[in-house]
Length: 259
Image (cartoon, rainbow, N blue to C red; front, side, top):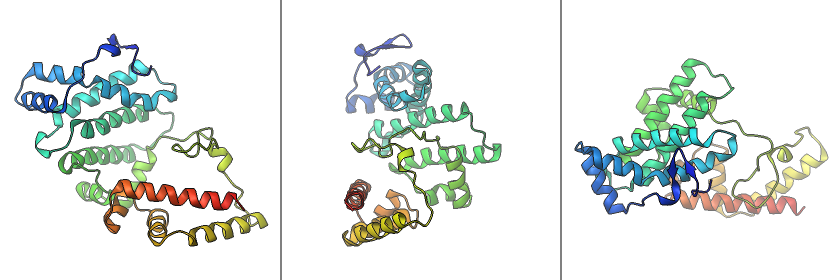
């Protein structure tokens, strides 16, 4: 694929590219009922759909089907985007497109989830999209639960229930050059001398981290908070939390493997 083939009759090499200012003007016109502006927006953002479906290309699904589903997500994003929020359309559109594709994949999954659990999960996803459009950022689980009038734990369980299953053959670390699979990372949890040594090595590695890195790991893995929630608590950006967390885990991994 790689954005250079014909999908659903669309020659991706000839797709138009809209500038940010042009996109905002077309969005304003589309909100006023201009059908031609809406069609131009759809055609000018098909590359956005292609960039998203590449992330799902290893699932064995028909790419034409994913492209069509992604286009539905794009249309929903165009129809619901608020130009007054001051965020780029792609910032709002990508999660909407990806969410539509995930819903399609979940509905066609072999795993069975109860209707009530699935309904709560979909309402949570809709609330997340709505809150994202309103604030220009990803909402916390607590904010989603409050918007739904549901318990936080119920929302977490519902979203986990429809989460995509992970293959044991997939890489354990998506953003690392380490080729180890999930299967290779599964350890025997029995109380063995090796497990004692591993725990001691991890404890020493954590103790060697800076105070901020230790706090981030504590909030993330002991209190179960999202990176966005951690960022708010320690007053830094979510991107900084992600970078510090990744560096801390890499330091721990190196220290443990060096034993």
